[in-house]
Image (cartoon, rainbow, N blue to C red):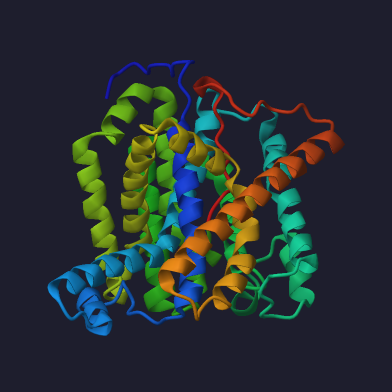
Length: 402
């Protein structure tokens, strides 16, 4: 790494970050659709002997049939692990927050103003998503609207964890995790400044693994705490994003050269594969989300950069990623509703219908999110930020999932 930081060129935008978010949110939405359609019909792709079990169930009668079954097995596996992209959103959230503060080291309006900005970014669209769920047809309604709905409106997706974590719209569990990470972000950022990138990563890595060890093997708590009901179990992904955001602000060219190099993508493949194998035992699962998130972040960064070779595709993915928060909040009750009613149809046809359904939801969610943001700004008389900005002013949208 060069000793003196280089400033980001003003003509360059970090479109690959939005492209990653676009890929991730679409993958997550299709994962929810596809798994609801298949309804555990196929073997678990994260279990042992997946391909042999899948091909045995497929029962091909020729070599060409075996090749077709293998291709179907790959497609099913990729569609069924879309939830892994949630870890990428965590990294991107940490990246955006640290990147926006790396230049000055302090929020422009102080930490009180910083919290205000995060709340105003998170809650209005979140409340609108609750309202849409209440009045909308074509959504699954597995649970009654009761006191938990009002707790969810406040942002509580943790207590009581066993009945509210997945309540009404299961994807909203991530909102509770974001609130926790935003709450402790000022402390984390000061630690990053004090310890430096390496020391900070070591600290957060130890804190993450100790938290997961205690939750899984000592306290035997509900699995939701490891998934994200307790922020410490997912701290590594967020901290890694913070370090990358800080370093990218200081050394943009050097970080891009290293991130988009062949050795780095090979390292990403290795880390992701290790993450897949870490499902084998409880002890190895301690490292699961850290391995999955780190490896997949590298892989999706490269895929997003490759998509930019097709300008229209790259621009479309970046646009979807820039407004992925609304799609995250709205999509799951709809895709579950339609997927459950299409189970008797051919899988190829259902996949095509799934793409169309998710595309339609995206076309509805993006203008709704834009309108809610504009209305919020108008009500609060806040100056509207430009939709696209240069890398020197780049503040990626931080709250999207999966």
